Image 1 (spheres, one colour):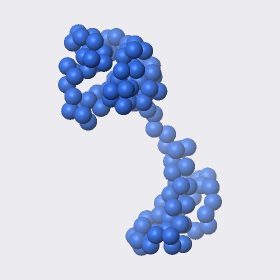
Image 2 (cartoon, helix red, strand yellow):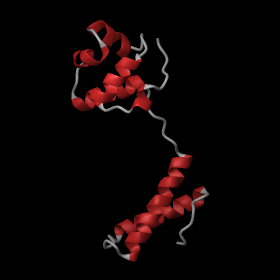
Image 3 (cartoon, one colour):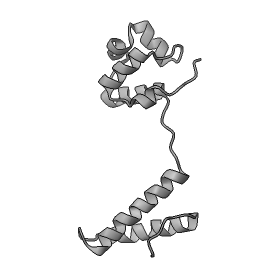
Image 4 (tube, helix red, strand yellow):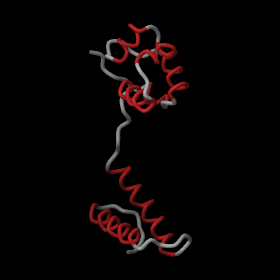
Length: 123
């Protein structure tokens, strides 16, 4: 396969097949096949980013996901958000996050600020 920018679905699918073949052959590091595989993966990734964008999660989903990852309970968020009632209102989308809450959540839970700053609807 000639390496070039993938512009069509057909070219993308052809590149995917080529990646699968190269992966199955287990190319040695620094071999021409490994270099080709690396370039193809870059091309495929670029195509996917342009044609299959993934939206960032909303702030509340990001917090809940991180809580699950770290095995945290709502009580564990009190130092970052406020008292039990405030944590409940935030997690149940009845109140917006404040800038101070966002800063503490970003620092302590390592959630990207741009995710926490994203607007979300209250119920």
